[in-house]
Amino acid sequence: MGAWRLWPEGDLGLVGDGGIVAVYIVPNLKYPANPPSVGDPDTIGMRTALYFAMIAISLAAMIGAAMLRRRLLRRYGGWNASLLAAAAYLIAVVAVGLVLPTINEVPDQFPAVVLWQFRIASLGAQLVMWTTIGITFGALPERTTTGEGRLRPKVAAF
Image (cartoon, rainbow, N blue to C red; front, side, top):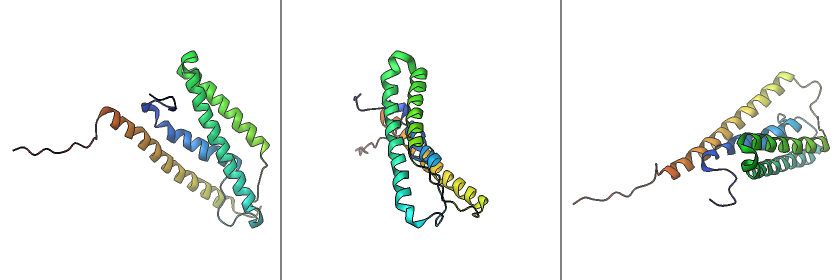
């Protein structure tokens, strides 16, 4: 058991949960996805930089919250440590979200139904991806720690 690990083997499936929150949901709340060609082309560089900055900050805050949870685990127990870590994460991302500028370049005449369908489709694709990541990272360590699924060489019997 190394000191670098944030989660025990059984909780590695949480990588998918934390990933979708930190990398997609929280940044998307501040800078929601827009269909291609919506917005001012002159500001695409700034919008992209702000979106990636929000991803990086959210991810760093999620990692910090996981480390904080691990430090608080013995003192406060699993449930309370998780709540305190989640509160710390929320405080960090809300503060950053309030500091970063708001960008709304969707034209007033753009159909709301198209915008809604695009954002729901984007969410669906992210859910599929992060669910796959969570299942993979949850199942693989279990197989390696229980010994199931290991390759066994065939021995010829004479």
